Amino acid sequence: MPEDLITAVTELDQAHYLTKIYAGGHLVYADEPEDKGGTNEAMPPGSLLLASLGSCTAITMRMYADRKEYPLTSIRIQLSICAEEKMDASTRIIRKIEMEGELTQEQRARLMQIADKCPIHKILTSPITIESHELKL
Image (cartoon, rainbow, N blue to C red):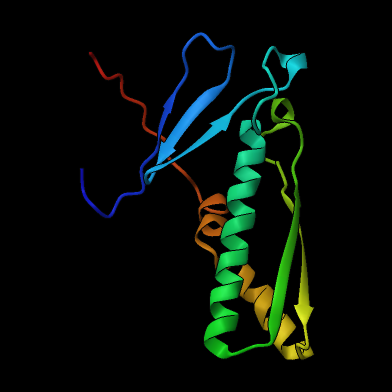
């Protein structure tokens, strides 16, 4: 496998939706709420998607602020999306960004532009192709 790929492996046995996710030497879990048959022991996949966008946005903004020596002290991002069963081509993610620090209006405006430059934002706002192949054991 080429080394410039980001990879993840998910495993689900008979644990009723509690899914192990391995990536980059780390382990996280995904699950479904109890009302959907899960155990509610971890975030559902839609929340993981929002977490990916939010963390990528915050990291991208922090990197830029650090490089430009902006006095950004903290970033808080609130994200929301419709329920998974209602998602379609018109699905919209709402992202609200709070920035703390003695920032000028120009710095705030620039950081809001930078928020849209995060890699996950770019992926989610571009056409995506997913290829599925069965691996035979």
